[in-house]
Length: 418
Image (cartoon, rainbow, N blue to C red; front, side, top):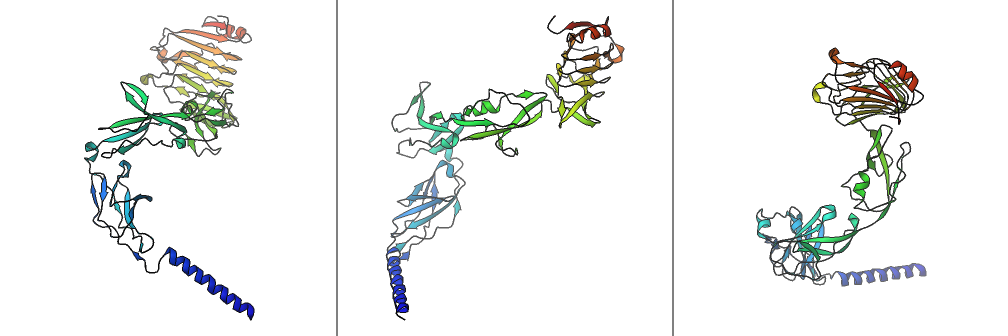
């Protein structure tokens, strides 16, 4: 029984204490202030009717609270189009904060920006400009800006004087628009490159900055008919890292691998793939040794043929693996000067078809491995002879057989021996 009485007294004491605390925090007779009314926008300044007994006001702009003393507030350049609410602030004793007024969208007069003076804070490294109004009879704010989210440490503001940038060492008044340029130091972060199947260069950098990252992303990396066509920050290749992407902190990059010539069309055949079509305007066509993990076995008739009318710009074709060129495999490439085989090759009769208006004066076949080339490996459309000089360069091992096959047809030389 005594325990129950003690618990009752303790509960009463706690409730009494809570009441007294709340009485101090929120007086029981405190009155809420009225919401601001008569809101007017003149230029970039909002004003409203004074609320009796208010100690100040709070202007909420898209959720950001700004405290002001009087019944007006100079708005920011970037506030245009944002949602605004205003409330009166009480003393917390006799008067409570008012409710926010009905929200409204701040819209500057279209001619305002041509009538007022502006200060532009520029981070040239990121093509980033923050613009503010130059408020009447006030000095230009020189508050350091936090550029760390962009990968830079702020040093000072600079102005252009007599055509040169000089540090701004003191606050100043200015009549007219002014540009201030941020002097910054790029932060250095570690970077790692991860690729399971595609070999990356061994000399890739181990660190990056906001200044060097675009250069890293632009590196031309090619191997075996494939290239790095993009970089991602995840192994699933869902988060691209591009030149305009703002990145800070340690970074791991994963490459997206594509054919160097994405206009190559490859069809599945028994044992692998065949090149059956091509489009593109680069100077070099790269035919890979493998596609989707299987060998590229041959170029079918018409597989690497451009339109005679479109002035195809291809000058060279490179084959990275063992390949067969069927009759009519290559043609219509008016600038074609060389075909290079890094693996073994079989070149059938009529594999290369040239026109009488072929732009290149000479054409070379360069074979670094075994070459089985037929005597009539080239032909002319409509049987018209052109003025093209043909040369076949082979390894020492293939030289005797090629010399025999092409005797009286064209020159045959050993690679590296003229």
